[in-house]
Amino acid sequence: MQTKTYGHFINGEWVVGTETFPNVNPSDTRDVIGHYAQGTEADVRAAVEAAAAAFPRWAASTPQERFDVLDRVGSEMLARAEELGTLLAREEGKTLKEAIGEVKRAGQIFKFFAGEALRMSGEHLRSVRPGVEIDLIREPVGVVGLITPWNFPIAIPAWKVAPALAYGNTVVLKPAEQAPASAWALAEILLRSGLPPGAFNLVLGDGTVGAALVAQPGVSAISFTGSREVGRQVAEACARRMIRVQVEMGGKNPLVVLDDAPLEAAVEAAVNGAYFSAGERCTASSRLIVTEGIYERFRAALLERIRRLRVGPALDPNTYIGPVIDEAQLRRILHYIELGQQEGAVLACGGQRLELGTPGFYLAPALFDETDNRMTINREEIFGPVAALIRVRDYEEALAVANDTDYGLSAGIFTRSLRYAHHFRRHVQAGTVMVNLPTAGLDYHIPFGGHKASGYGPKEQGRYAQEFYTVVKTCYVAPEIT
Ligand SMILES: NC(=O)C1=CN([C@@H]2O[C@H](COP(=O)(O)OP(=O)(O)OC[C@H]3O[C@@H](n4cnc5c(N)ncnc54)[C@H](OP(=O)(O)O)[C@@H]3O)[C@@H](O)[C@H]2O)C=CC1
Ligand SMILES: O=C(O)CCC(=O)C(=O)O
Image (cartoon, rainbow, N blue to C red; front, top):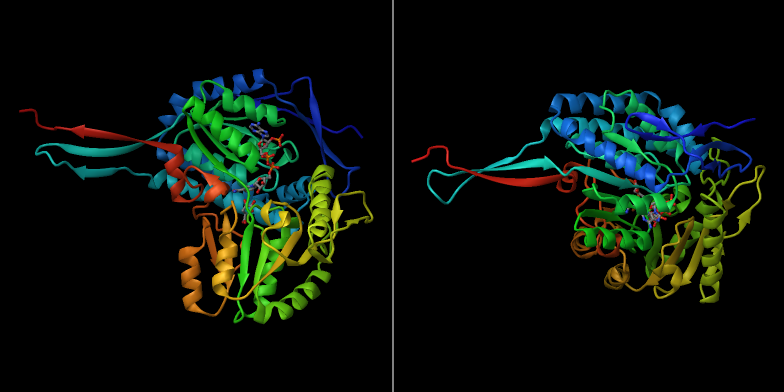
């Protein structure tokens, strides 16, 4: 059967170029979801020009107009959550339940930012000089380039596109080539939302499209989510051009389990944080730091729980863990499994490729035991269903190990002690802290961003998103001329 070809969305029109790439279902590689256009520098230029031309009109739009557009998008996403979730699960490999949840979250994000368009305000201050008034007003930045990864192919585009538009910017989105269908579906919804042509543009393709967007004159800001390596290049390129930049990158997130932790809840949080979404979450709990009084019981209960995690196709309702995204990612994870053992870690379970009923990228969830925080598997982001147990003496050592990393995205602790929970909140070096909760799983209306090598620039999401998507203008006014 012939699969459909999907194009870029530029200046309110669909554009298909000469080259395309296939979007393959990681649960069953025989299933090609569609062929997607491979963008060129000329496509990026056309998209940026369209966004620049649309900017004055959209920047001058009323809060009501912005509310209506964003609210419509949110409503349609929520109404079509099951259908869009099925598409997302098919292209990305997370389970249907997780995928539907992600689409709903994206819809709620649009609705939240619809409200923000109405709530947006400036500030009035009194001057130290008599007869002078001061207003701080927020204005849109201009054309913003948005570059997103494959692991949350609709939520991450949503949490960049919605605030960009809510605050009056125009947009060029470049989604990941491994999962372009969800972003294409978002463009198709935006097309019917009442947004003027050119205010939102989509250019599909590989990293060369992202690089062209970063280099394009006319782009005033770049918001990027992805790996540390690419994030650093993007930040450096933007700094050279002196344009605004926000890069959100990976994590090596610690989950600390203290002797007094409720065992069952801690195990459940570890399983959720480390293995759900096949561990392909920047907030995944890849380091399980456990004090010695509970270590043996925690390990036994965790192993027992992992054995009950069913790996299978994303759309099978009995699946807990779907495939990883592609062959390259699978090989990368297998390389770390090998390396961990070479460096002396004990592979307590999993870690082998699984051949199931359909040809896909399936991996048995892996747990390393008795690891040391200096091992490569505890230093580098693996981005797969792999976690490592690290045994520590007490809380103080747990905190020191948790902080002994280049990253600083999310950190969690399980304890009944208010004292330790409070101390951890204060002293752990991470952008998000979870007490008695998994390290992954964010609210849609709350700011999110990493510290240290996990993030650079203002936070994303929630009300704080305006720090990136607006510029502050300071106005001094002497109303009465003497
Ligand atoms: N902190 C956070 O909020 C989150 C962070 N992440 C992180 O994302 C990573 C996984 O995503 P992944 O897609 O593999 O990350 P990548 O860094 O490989 O890619 C991210 C995006 O950048 C594009 N890109 C690639 N090269 C360039 C370049 N030179 N210039 C500009 N853009 C480029 C990619 O295109 P292409 O389509 O070719 O891949 C993709 O769209 C993990 O490290 C994960 O931790 C994920 C989710 C949330
Ligand atoms: O933990 C979450 O809810 C999502 C955060 C995210 O973007 C990620 O983990 O990649």
